[in-house]
Length: 102
Image (cartoon, rainbow, N blue to C red):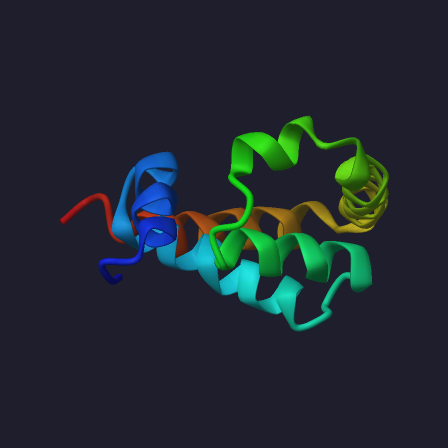
């Protein structure tokens, strides 16, 4: 990552650089509009250091778009086959934490 205070906050929250980089990658996707204009604004503000994650969690302005995104994720998750779910969990763990056996 960099000397950017946002990068340091991400690493502190995520617990390691690899997980922080994944979180940042997804924030960039949100900023670029992957989940609509409200979450794009939120991601822009986080990435630019104008709002902290703690303040996002407390914000009523982002409560509804975050809740809608969570509901959409839960609907999607309920439709994923068990085998596909296991594959996605393993892939996510690898992306976030790397090979823990090494």
